[in-house]
Amino acid sequence: MSTPVSAIILTDNIRRGIGLMVLGALLVPGLDAAAKLLGGRHGLPTGEIALLRFVLQCLMVLPFLVVLEGWRSLRIRHVRLNLLRGALLGVASFLFFLALKSMPLADATAIFFVEPMIVTLLSALFLKESVGWRRIAAVLVGFVGALIVIRPNFLALGLVATLPLMTAALVAVYLILSRHLAARTPPLAMHFYAGIGGSLVMLAACLGGMAIGMPEMDLVVPRGTAVWGLLVIMGLFATVGHLLFVQAYRYAPASLLAPFSYFEIVSATILGLALFGDMPDLGKASGIAIIVASGVYIVWRENSLARRPPVRPLDRT
Image 1 (cartoon, rainbow, N blue to C red):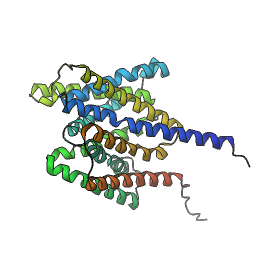
Image 2 (image 1 turned 120 degrees about the horizontal axis):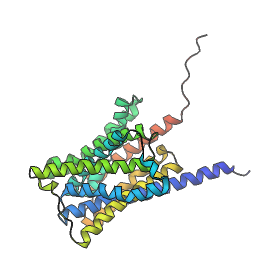
Image 3 (image 1 turned 90 degrees about the vertical axis):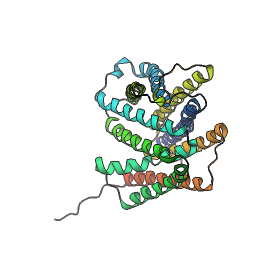
Image 4 (image 1 turned 135 degrees about the vertical axis):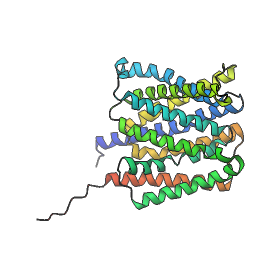
């Protein structure tokens, strides 16, 4: 008995989607590693790193946008909400880059991955989505995992160790807005306007910070081949990673692809070890494992509930 052609195409598409998602997840920590090198080894102010990350994002995604979708795609509805998304992401990136100046890359990335759990809670609060006790329990377990990773960093660094958690909260709100706008805005246009929003909020923050004498918000002229090379890598990884995610979602459902985003932790751990000599100890590794397991369970649970047929009301006749 032969397999139907439609089933083969679907399987091939899912495989392509998973492959693109994994590749994107492995690449994205590269931009964080570049930001850590720029701030730690080359002394570039954190505010400027975040600002240039979004400026480069706009410059790099614009040619793809024009070639693939045309200039008309820049005319979108809900411009303010799309700019707000970018502003949230801009502040989130700044906080995360600030954390990376002091924290291991793998630790910060792992703490950030409580984001799916925060999205679950916000979806229940603002989108009125039904969240059962199993997912609530998974959220609580995931936060326990985050606390295991945060604790040794908190003892060494203080409140800096909570910055990835704040980043996760801001990105969760960004994703809630993205869900709301996705049906009305093409993905490349969303990415471009997010870059505009992030650039504007970080430019304003840098100018304000310079006015009150905050060194982390200074604007300086980047100097040296290494610095410019890292800036290009940061912008390139951000843009290519997003484009890979966009293509992945065209081939396979988001609910199926979401668990593969945790490959970011694998890449972050490898880059942290190779570039900075950071290796998670047994305690941190167990916390990372708990966060990953909780996040994967939440995604699996949402996927299984989405496949269930709707409950029909009882026939009272």
